[in-house]
Amino acid sequence: MVVKYYAEVNLVCILFLVVLIIFTNQTGNKNCRLSSDRRVLKLLLLTTVIMCISDMAAGICRGQFFPGARVLIEISNLLYYETVSVVSFLWLVFVFSKLGIIRNYKSELLLWTLPLILITAIICVNPLTNWMFIIDENNLYARNAGVYFHWLISWGYLIVATVASAYKTIREPDKSKRREIRSLLSFIIAPSIAAAVQMLFYGVTCFQVGVVISLLITYLNDQNDQILTDALTGLSNRYGFDKYWESYTQHHAETHLTLMMIDVDSFKQINDKFSHLEGDRALTEVANAVKNSCEAALSKWRACRYGGDEFVLSACDCAPEEIEELKEKIRKQLAEINHSYTLSVSTGTATGMCANADDIDRLLLEADKSMYEDKKRIK
Image (cartoon, rainbow, N blue to C red; front, side, top):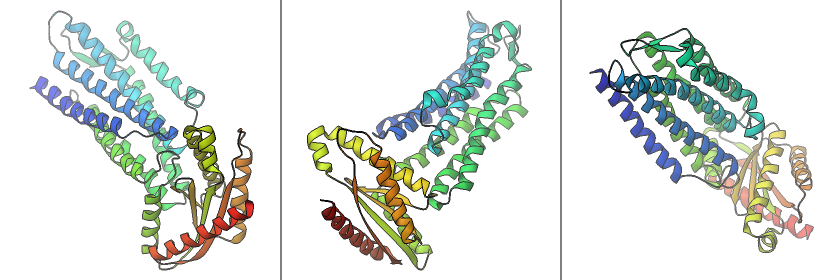
């Protein structure tokens, strides 16, 4: 009965994880930061598969006597402890990447890896110390004092990720972005319940079930983000722009909306002279300049890649001096980029009261006309 329980629980988890891994491979994109997120998510899924396999092996071999049984029980339990720690660490990395807390994995994550390195060393020497757990003469697993230190480090990673998500949620003024961040907060719930059951009822294994549930929710939320996000730049795409303001105007009778249309100057020449790959790089750098400038304006502005080399920035209740300040910030950031070509943009703005999608389309046309007038003036 115990063998059947361990096998069924873990096999079901593995099946779900394999399906998610397949879909993750099929829905990758070219954006650097997003592809990093996807790689971490895929690594999370693969590590959880190993966790399930090791737990299943430990459960099936528990109390069994056959050649190599004791070694197999020892190794599977060691692997289970290690994968629990790694899963917790990878979730921290995933959250930090999503929140923009880390951009350079190698330099900024070094400090956070130290607890993982420490617990890995302790796990590796457990066959000599028996500090984490012991395999008795009946080939049965029994916890030892070190298990609490292991849980302290593993749950420490999960708690730090949750606190970071909660802090970012409180600080984020944009409602739609807050909803995206709040989805990260829910990850800890299912593993917490499962871990409590596993700690209280000795012999019951279900922590990995909680992790799989949370990963499934994370994947679905991530897929929703992908639908609304431009693959190259990481900004909201046109569909995301339309969905956001459609929802916003439905809940606000009159919205004093400002739209700023941005077009990259001489973009066709960059593509023709330096290659389309360099053109993609130029678009990414313009998007980063736009994004950084919006963040410097206390996230009042929403940035969107509207299509091709066109970007749209939008904000409610925006004063004329704020518009000019944002334009200057973007131009200043682009001027600091050193290439064999010059990156510059033409801009056009339109402001008006919006009650529905037709009003927004009207403003977009006005901003587009204003932008081409600016482009002619520059030429």
